[in-house]
Figure 1: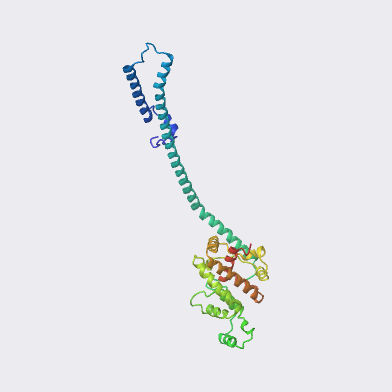
Figure 2: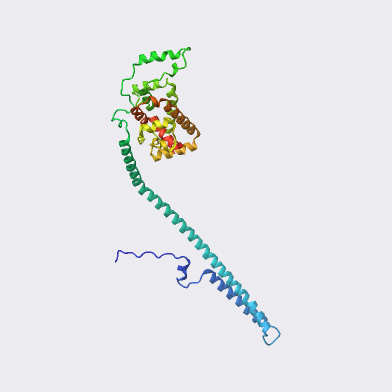
Length: 341
């Protein structure tokens, strides 16, 4: 067919040149010229000088004459063959290097194309698996469902005490004669849960009020400040807790954590499965000493604080606490630090 063009032949290197025309190599041409010159000089010498005084050519004289004439010719052709072999080896090494570079580029291109083609499919399948696991956990979990749109799960369902009355209760804590236990008067668990999630927006007056009240409680003030530091550091890498969807764990597992259990027994608390966030956090944990110290301080503060307040929390309040930004940061950094291993 006129539309089918013949494919170019495969370059076989030295073997393809062996089957081509019988042209002489430049080294062979030089060897022929030098050999001809040498023979001409030998004939001229014999014509001018002759074979000596004897009339006949004896065996010894013939052998010497043959060596004088033949050895230089042999050396000329040995040098020619050596030059030709060196040139062929050099050309083949250059061709081999070019072939290896081309194969390397093809391999890299194919690997990049395969990664680009498979990436979205793999991510989609993983997301489907994660969603399926989350639905299963939702069925097993025995606490409140996800927050409705426009509202926050962390908001208290009951009306908090009036601020003036609370101010009157906290005011005696400023006196020098305050007994040691007076400074430990705790705020409501609803305020603690709300403060651990931090205000939703700049207009979230209820969130800011709960945060101010929680900062007066020694049990949670250290955790809230440590959480704020960690969340700020994580945001520098583009990791925001609102983007993470943790798997839900039953309140019994959280209470076992408060009771001192660690390792696989509480592995369900490590509900953050976002691979990019885990990879970024793990890399920064290894490379950034400031981030590592802040993360360890935050994990210790969360452990201590939750242990102190767990007995006062109901199952629904534990469920709300698990949805806060502070709890999500604990799940993320806990997995990176190996708390749940």
